[in-house]
Image (cartoon, rainbow over the protein chains, first blue to last red):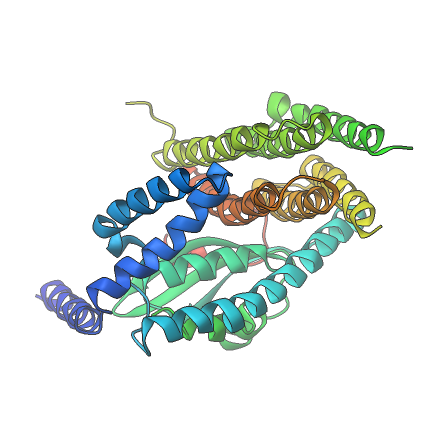
Length: 198
Length: 90
Length: 104
């Protein structure tokens, strides 16, 4: 009886969340345009030539692919503003700042691991932190960023009842409190991701 | 000292590093240790291909590097699935 | 000038990462060394190569795409291997293990 109620509650909660996402999806042509805007520069760089025939073939092929792969990249993006506004904001403000933050973090983490290798002053542990992101893409990007920040490695993700928990292997445990550990591990990356992803 | 010699020296250093990692592949105490060693060696091979593309001026090697990186990721995920099922082949 | 600095930094980081894989005590800490040192070293070497070569712009961008793909793929594979190793039954040498508390 107890288990039945719990399962029922979980299913209801999941359905409500799904309906919320579903109701707030961005329109179809914007999804196609965003996917095409990712795929066409990739074609241009990988093919490596700017002949007109090559450009036309690439544009048509990527348009066909993006018209039926439109949900893969864009299903978790928050609907806010028009597509042009979103693209310009992403290209000019969001991406350079995130790239600079991540670059300095990667540099710091490599130097820190090199120091750990030389002096062997490790004190490892596995801690559990909570995050506010709920979508697949957001959690994936957050887990990758946590793996690249100094001294942490994502071990597993657990999602239940609309809450998400991450298990993190920390090479030098400083605190066991969940909020403090979350502050120290996630930093400001989560705030950045919450502006775009669910 | 010109650029080619410097880059060839860089490739030699990377090769020696891969040779060090072969110890972990051959004598690693457990199976995941060997998988970590193989993945690291493949990433170093990707970087070596990129350096050779600059040294010899043949830039098609970069496409090969991208393909090798993707194959490495798929291989790593398959190994991880194999470990997750408890090491059973079926 | 800065490209030679980046190249030397990347080589040093890669050598230290290999030493870390040899010296650390268990799989998870070895994964730390593998992921971070490989990603940082490979990215700095590739940026140095993109600054060093005298090729057209599209080919320089190809180096940057390769660096971006390494930064995207390497942490994902290391996360999968860490999770698989835990499910395989390798106990980590740690002071606190909250994953074992929740999954007895």
